[in-house]
Length: 449
Image 1: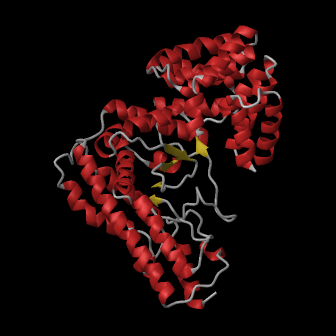
Image 2: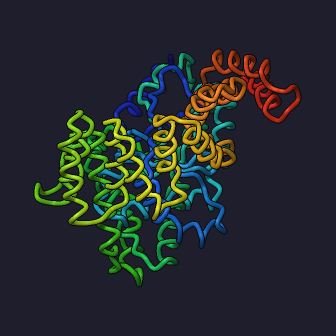
Image 3: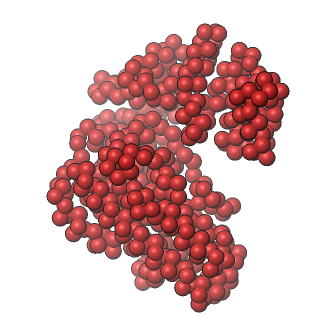
């Protein structure tokens, strides 16, 4: 590899908070993080984004995914979907910080950066003949998720035209980030909120930016230094008419309950007083995870006396499911569904419980519940476990064709190609030829090959 380019790569490796996002296009060296499914967090994010989406995207609602990455970051990819790292939600002290970052990502969508950056990247790749550079995320902190990716390209890059092309691209990226910051401020003003959270998050990133700035040429960065970005937007934010607006108390409580849940499940360090409801919530989750179900139940029941939350009720139902006390599970999950009848995760737990309870009536009810979400799931593929339980339910009533079809769907969504094809072909043998179900099985078999 050219020595000058090697030095450039070495500088990139020092930039700990910048990463190539390789979700849609991965390389063997890219880190992989899982998508987190949680009704409490997802519904809170929907509430955070509702007003922003209404004024900016004409109710064209992007999917928002939560990534298990503990770093502070969020990004949008070419199809307009937004990804938020669990680390951002944990480190955000206020709802406003998260909302401001989402506004930044929506700013990228409004300005079409999630598409144009890919076009610019394609141009860069053609100029440099480095097809392995596949960064497509347009985010708050940067493009690279794996600092080793650039060092493993396996292709040399000469200076001259190629080096200029790279820096032109990085300049283009930095300009887009400034534009997205400005759009975020405008959007937050439009919904009557301050953008102070944008500064707060950038300050957190700056504190994690453990690097000597003299080692880095700003021309080699996808983003301006966090401190530089803060200096550019500070005056604009503090001159907003809504600069003094703060989050509603009930939203702050929900935000901290979300952070407590993250601590409980993800083992982040505790940040709450030991006598707070948030500490009790995270403790109940940790007890549940460690198998101390009765101790977890005691805390959750006490919590419900202090502050009622449908998600405490959901967790109680889940614990009773683990204890195989299915009547108790149904009692609590039905209570949760009274206030959230369209909540998919609650309905899945009810269907699972009915399935475990057994009896033809319960199994058919389970199938009806799971099938009620089928069209939604088919479009988004966000809840593949529904197909797993549908397969199990159909098998129990000896409908082997539909059992095989649904398990084939599960394997196709989870990218288990051989199993998907195998079960799709098995399903076709037990389904009426050219029926809708047979065609679905045939499609899986053909598209997975």
